[in-house]
Length: 281
Ligand code: SAM
Image 1: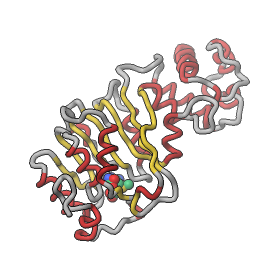
Image 2 (image 1 turned 135 degrees about the horizontal axis):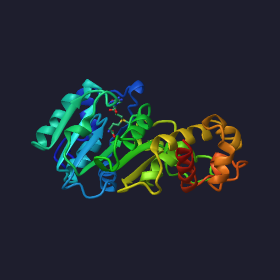
Image 3 (image 1 turned 45 degrees about the horizontal axis):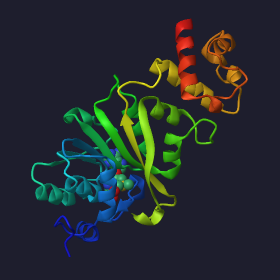
Image 4 (image 1 turned 30 degrees about the horizontal axis):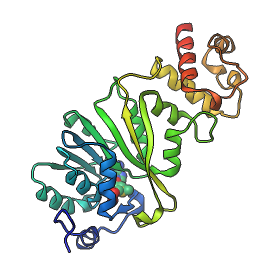
């Protein structure tokens, strides 16, 4: 029986095209089109947007995005075995789906799209964090994309939305929350995927803020959070020692007790410290 969009069900697509999942490519497929439509809805109104999807695989989420009315979808897939299945989807939605057979780490697909741009993906676990960090650190802010709706392992999703004082709080939380609104919008058990991974997953929706929540030089902030969390059990005066000869005094100047640990500092405090460090030269 055909699915609601008139294309064959995903199990049939996988069987027809011999798309047995490859672990090395992080292939855990979503075969329930109701679920992929639900994920597409988390991205907001797509009708006036270009959408970038990384790793369409057999096309479940791609179909959800197109059925949700995305103006155009650019899907970047590394596994050439998926191309015939994706061509069928493209033929079904003429002029709206472009498939790029490439490694998402080696191309800059955002450059080919017209704003407003939303990124929506069930990311391969092995490259998910790397791609997120790249999207969060463009040359200029605001970025060309307006939102990211991304599936991660639950543990990574928790690190993105973590608050100070929690175990998951660290560099990723600060990077994401400095210039974005980030929240978990959906959690999925392993059984939602074929084959099921060992762990649960979650969809995080990040909206780009027009400007950072607090002013800070991105490089200084990045160096501070790297040094602070690389030795997260250490007091800041020890963990940050290598950053400036007068670090302890600079911490005091920023109103931060040098005996505190990085995991207790709020985003605002990190940004304040970054400004004091930058001014100290
Ligand atoms: N979107 C599909 C779904 O939801 O069922 C598949 C998701 S699966 C978790 C990840 C997909 O990313 C796979 O199709 C895999 O081949 C692809 N992939 C893995 N590494 C990639 C890379 N570096 N660049 C582009 N695609 C990649």
